[in-house]
Length: 368
Ligand code: ADP
Image (cartoon, rainbow, N blue to C red):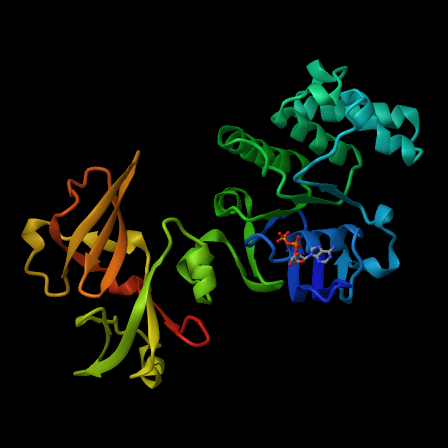
């Protein structure tokens, strides 16, 4: 049974802005499903339509096989947690937790039972009597989650809940959310613009741009096989290197030419033949910073190595990022921390041809 199915969803605001367009997704029960995209791409609009806070212009959303068109928002079994979570400041934590349940006329004993359970899960027993105005960012988020959990929803909708926390707390709350998802065993739809959050939390990630779906998959699938340039650049840090390139064949092999005269042979794969039609066309070549290797002294005879110069070195705990420049091309390279290169050094690098991505310059779709 699928938990949430989104079919051909379309949203046009009254001022004419199309925020969501031809949007399809199939979210499994108990999945931690992340919707990842830059600010303004329509994530909040989407989540608000699932919650029933925003009208659907066209299309449908099914929650446990029932169309939301036939179910009022409060009966959809969804609970929403927002980035600017507004708790009632003059109420205690306990009162914040019970408020929604009292509105829904849930019997007192049931309210007490649910709150007791949530207090145990979130470890908030010590702050139940505190006014929420006096809580820290992390505590406020726990209470906001608590308020969602006591509603016993089928689906949690989380809209950038960690946005306003500092980096350290964000990391802590990410791991708390992961544990919470395991404990509760419920479907979570989580919206963010932050790929680190998406990578850590999502069982699958949907990449969104300008209101529509670019690609859905695990982080690894998006990283290894992005369908287009947008996904390729949005996933992975530092970003995938890209440069203009031209395809040609020579002695039965396909080659890419890039920069001012660099050439690299592509691996012979079953689908290489399909690439021949792109010969002479303007293409973009992409390679991740981890797929460019510095050639050490004893490998120098490797003909596929190219010469480049180190522009700058960024030291980062476990690795270094080197910015390299060559003839008409610049690459970022990630290497182990033991790399001894410094700015101004000339060195040779080897591009792993198995890991080269090729994009059509016009459609920006990946073609290999
Ligand atoms: P995100 O959550 O990804 O930042 P939003 O869903 O908030 O994106 O916004 C998507 C687009 O819809 C943006 O162009 C935004 O300006 C527009 N938008 C959002 N809310 C409204 C509204 N109430 N009326 C008109 N346009 C809106």
